[in-house]
Length: 65
Image (cartoon, rainbow, N blue to C red; front, side, top):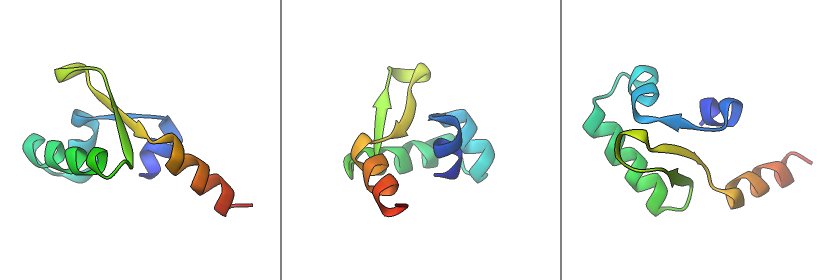
């Protein structure tokens, strides 16, 4: 999540490198995080990127005040 906060978004390939997990594993993690409304998926197929859901960002910002 730190990478997404600093860079605004992440794709499957970058997540594989950072986590040392397979493409399929990362895809499953992203699917679960999208389902839980933590991440928002943008784009289709290989071009898909993920960013933090706006509600998550608001909660995080409010908790830092």
